[in-house]
Image 1: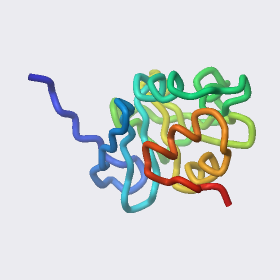
Image 2 (image 1 turned 180 degrees about the vertical axis):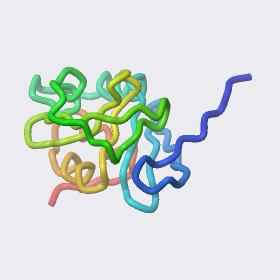
Image 3 (image 1 turned 120 degrees about the horizontal axis):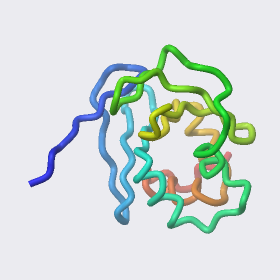
Image 4 (image 1 turned 180 degrees about the horizontal axis):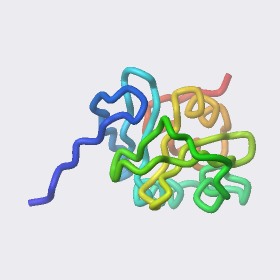
Length: 132
């Protein structure tokens, strides 16, 4: 029997809702609209996408930290997340490599990009036609 980890929103401190679609898991906050993806979840998402080299989620994994974001703690280890820039997208990444957090506005911005991982993420979140 596996251990179930209850992930808490790093912005709202409320329990995140786990969404699963085609074996890709994303933890979503119903209150603020943000999303947490463990590194393994992010890799699963990226592996399902037909991605150009410029895919912002792929670039976020290797991007240099822009600045520490002391307000956001990793839902897995409570380390202070760092903000990284992937194109025009800014997201929070665990410095220990546990995953990435997209605030609601960042997630909406990503979903308006109809290529790469964003199209798969829109399917996971049930947000078809997110462009606009």
